[in-house]
Image 1 (cartoon, rainbow, N blue to C red):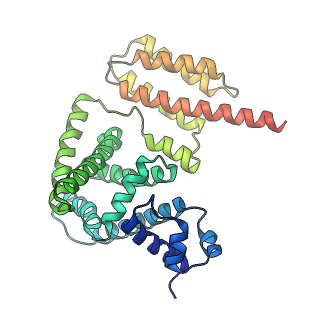
Image 2: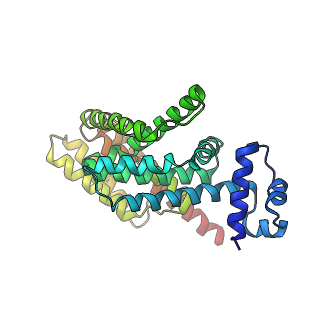
Image 3: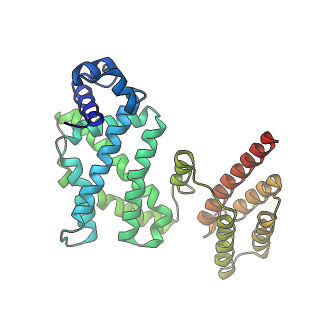
Length: 301
């Protein structure tokens, strides 16, 4: 007998396709699947939980397909990536799931944002595999822009032609556009996000903890690059001062924040602006987490 959890998910998906998510109630899912209310609530707390489960299952299926494609022969890594993206999206059953994904993402559900984050993180990593470690600071931007293009192409195509585009034809073109954008970002050393937003997403969704040692490593890396260039002595001193403040056993968040702002301003319009901005935002997260731990300790007393 089919697993009841998946029976509920399959039934819900069919009802979502027929009636739309807003017009599908839990009662409709129960009646169509012939599953008892208690069984439903054994697996799901709400209709939103069912949506998340459907999208998560779809993501897992996509990853299985992508791993299977790695065993096939391709003329290039870029050709493999094109198929890893196009094959799952070209399956007929994916169309309603894609529509659901974009719809729920814009509704602001945190769980959906985390799922989108998994897709972006995977593509970001694949782009680094293909184009090298030097694009890592820009890989999130590139992946985000790719999925934005996919969404707009899908919506416009559906509106004009009432069907899905041929993703095997469209996706290689989009990847060529992304390649051109990556080159522009490398040449200009500019990006939209000052740090990897996946770090913040992970922090909210899975409790990622920023260690003091990690922040100190970023400071040391910035100093090493600064010392190798024509960096003013005053900027080097700011780096040393920040290192000393964070290395202390008991940190002064106010002083560190002042030092961080001064450091970020000192490296504006320089070749190390991106690294300084990334350090600024990650160190701020570290300070926020330190303050939260301090408040929790105080409350326990």
